[in-house]
Amino acid sequence: MTVETAKKKVILSGIQSSGALTLGSYIGAIRNWVELSEEYDCYYCIVDMHAITVRQDPETLRRNTLEQLAQYVAAGLDPKRNVLFVQSHVPSHAQLGWVLGCYAMFGELSRMTQFKEKSAKNAGNINAGLFTYPVLMAADILLYQADLVPVGDDQRQHLEITRDIAMRFNGIYGETFKIPEAHIPKLGARVMDLQSPGNKMSKSEAASGGCVGIMDKPEDIMRAFKRAVTDSGSEVRFDPETKPGVSNLMQIYAVCANKTLPEVEREFSGRGYGDFKRSVGEAVIETLRPIREDASRLAGDRALLAEICADGAERASLAAERTLRNVYDKLGFVLK
Ligand code: AQP
Image (cartoon, rainbow, N blue to C red; front, side, top):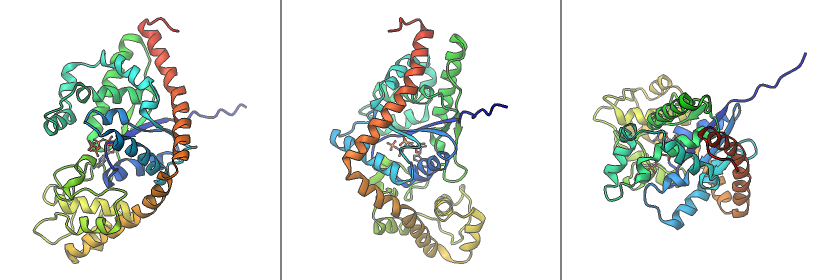
């Protein structure tokens, strides 16, 4: 009898190097990436090409990209087990992005919520890259024939358009791309801003006072939680409709203290918001402490980071070029 080793399923995900990573990026994305890396073949990238859809200072972008890589590793992503890479190091992303742009419709791109939100925020720079952002994201995913894409709730619509583009292309040229599924975490899929719990916690809103960075100092984290917006009541109860601030804090606490929402409700029954907010702050500080310490150390080792980048780019390119070549062939391009 022959024993066949089943091929592992493939995961692809990425985060823009558009600012310091937040508690939202950690809870909504990276924490789950670490768990998934036990079971899947994982490609995790730093999407610097997506980041320039909003104007970036070159030195800050370079520093953010390398520091983000250090934070990936510090958060538990082993560069040997996972392919960790920088998007701009693998030219196939831009190449497939162009091709897929010819199979994405103006109308469907116009309906993207993120485009509408970012256009409103960056009224002076509504560039074509902001509009075609989902096309490049589709290329990121489809190049690796990903089965699953772990994302926060906000990226659900971009994954839908990726699937639509892939199905459209497959419909014309035959089976070319794997149709990916979204993997949305059950808890913490949308971590909200501590000052405006109606808005997602975002890297680019770091100045709001409602955003917690994964590299923030413990005293700053505690201050942000003590000041977090709650509501006029005093009951720690999960109800995102009427108690968005408290419900957001409950989710953060549940994830960081590894408890269920009913356990959190029981733990804080009759204890008031002050006590609750302090406990959430402490749980977050302890969750982030080892990551911050390790990431600071790794960020200082530029030679190691360069080595991880080079190795990741080589392994990612191997998989990506295979898909791109197949696509070019199907399109009728003359192959080199
Ligand atoms: N607040 C959040 N809650 C849950 N998940 C989140 N993610 C980001 N913020 C939250 C998830 O992290 C991944 C990376 O996102 P990204 O940085 O590539 O893009 P984004 O969603 O636009 O993140 P930001 O922080 O809001 O960046 P800026 O401010 O530059 O636009 C995604 O899986 C996302 O769902």
